[in-house]
Amino acid sequence: MTRDDGSTGSRERILAAAAAMLAEDLTARLSVRAVAARAGVSTGSLRFHFPTQRALQDAVLARIYDHVFPDDPIHDRSLPARDRLVNCLRQVLAPAGVGKQAREAWGNAYQMFIAPEPTEQVRAAYLAVERAAWRRIEYWLTVLADEGALPREDHARRVRFLLTVLQGLSIDRALPAEDSILKSETETLYTAVDCVLNAPTT
Image (cartoon, rainbow, N blue to C red; front, side):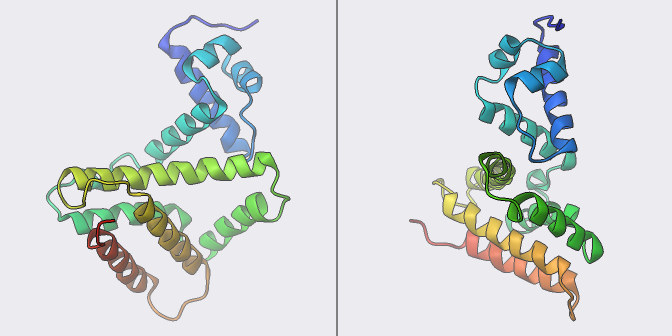
């Protein structure tokens, strides 16, 4: 028997249950029945709050992202837009660590997303992670566009570019390096941000 009081508390229980399932296995399929059972709510309640599986995944990953990065530097208007965006991108790289920690993170990513056959479950898990990162970068660019630092337009090209730069830098963190990683990474981030902020409009 499920306990479902119909309050907003059920939404929070659903998000907490789904987050716990993803923490145990990032490729876990967040099925309506499994999440509802874990949260102690009815499937109808879950569908009321999250009409689709994608809506649930997106909300859970957004919640996790907000928990990992609670203080968003994009709002620190004491710094120029260029520095704020670099600081935001550094936040994305920070959890990857460097050296051994970065190698372990990439090893885990390989085991979850590259080594197995690309089943629908693996694909959905990867795309959910990518969508969360995409939304976060798109949000930062929208904030800067609202301030006039960028044109108000679709930022898809800029988001894809920045995601590609971040993926490359996170791989660099796992590889043996001669130079200071911080120095070369900072130069790369500023170059990428300058390209984004000074790109011609389409």
